[in-house]
Image (cartoon, rainbow, N blue to C red; front, side, top):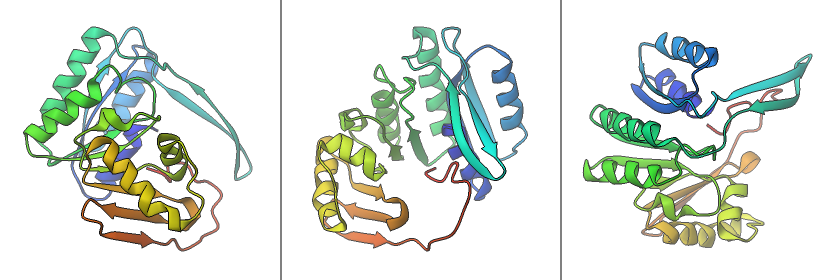
Amino acid sequence: GGAGNVARNVAALGGQASLAGAVGEADAAKTLAQLLGADPRLIARLIPDATRRTAIKTRYVGGTQQMLRTDRETVAPLAAAARTQLIEAVKAGLAECPVLVLSDYGKGVLMGGVAQESIAQAKAAKKIVLVDPKGHDYARYKGATLITPNRKEAEEALGRKLGDLAELPQGARDLMRTAERDAAVSTLGAQGMFLMKQDGAAMHVPTFAREVFDVTGAGD
């Protein structure tokens, strides 16, 4: 789950992914490293932090239907040493990749200026920066090329509801203005996606409905 799922998606599509993230020091971290290491298209730079636990999501399934999920995780900023190592891991990844993806799950890893420093490194290296945001303060993503909130996340950041498609253009403009971004994509569940660029160009991409029993990772 988390950023690991995004990296695996990149690799599955034929890309080369460099994953930087934080883990705890228990057996779950070793299992995660082994799973990521088995993918030749993925370089994992996992930073151990003794103050954290590796996030574990447990899904309870009855037949083919997921009924509930329990999460065991740490939601706090990184320890100072781990923070420094993570910034260095991002720098190493930027030397290999044309795009930086910040997949923010609100667990604290990108807090304490980590997001801002990572974006600054990428912009200095003339890299594209994509952000899947979390929370109401998008100012920490200032300088990103593109943000991709879902409707609920966009509403939280804007402090208002986006009731229908007609309200999305102004919502996207307001989101871009908060952090001087070039474009915004709002994912809308069954209604697809809405894209707007800084020059006003916009596009609505509808979905083609399917009956599915498990939407795990669909947002990624």
